[in-house]
Image (tube, rainbow over all chains, first blue to last red; front, side, top):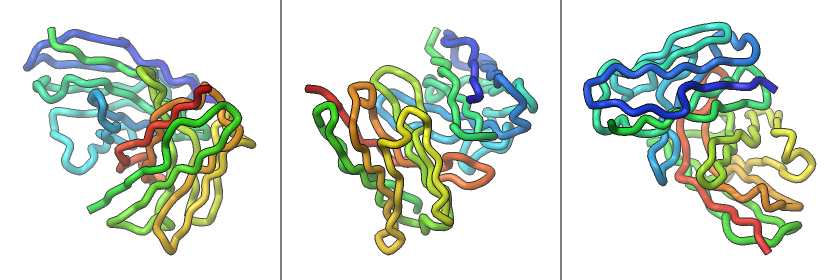
Length: 107
Length: 117
């Protein structure tokens, strides 16, 4: 199975900050990498697929980059509604696997 | 509008069975990959199973031989039959739509399964 390692596991930031979350795969996954946002008590929401393609309706302050084994999710200017937990997931091979999550908290 | 509505969760004893349903609307399930993903209380996400339009299925190792994914195209509904349940299967189970290049573009609201004596 492909292991996905996210860092940091949590971070504190202020509104307007630039935030970067990294995700590393245990083997090459090309660009079969997705990012999800989850708020407490809610289902995950798809943000990005194909490592860098934004889902319809996702604000442009979100962006994804990377290929191979190393990937990044960037929020260019953190907004109040962005405080949540973020997960990466590889879909290069089964079983699909998620990272452990990054909780973005208000500083 | 795409909607996924899960049902069938509840409290069950270890060794018991449950069948979860995911009713889809706004699209046709046999044109997509339909997945089940679970989340243990306070923990992260775990992909469980997928069914393709040609009936190809995949499972995470921990549920192989105990869980079966299926679908009824006439009802536009996907199922997860869960047998020989264990306490570690306790989780919120989500149904999620996907396709080849996008694993889970839409998610349902989830249904809670609690395995306890």
